[in-house]
Image (cartoon, rainbow, N blue to C red):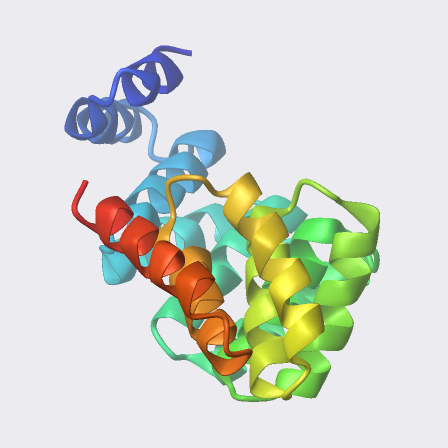
Length: 198
């Protein structure tokens, strides 16, 4: 699809305009609402993203992908009860969908329910060794639970899977500091600063 090509080329605003053009012609285009919602969420335009994802959910109320994307946006907006209700709807359709379980884990993390988050995210990471977000949020949850060695393992995996994301690297720096490994910590902080400045 042309929008995917535009995104691969870094032409984000053109992709947004393309989806808006599709919706002008066909306001009931589920894929355009969903994809535009995801794109706007990545651009931190959470309210507009929610509008498009809610429109997609009205078109297909049992679409697990749409419900999960909507719940993630609601989580970003700190509308946690609505996010959880949306994820429970998705679970009724597919109880073991990895995207749903990941979103539940992130939601628990954002609510400060670190033990529940770690349980969900451990389940996700055991089934998807490529889930960068799963390993990142599990590592952060383990850190807050005081399980530092496990947190290091999870965040090292996250840093490998998310090479452009400074967050797992920075948290590794903090954990190495806590473990009295100053050289390793300093290297992580340097890497995190380099990634943040890009």
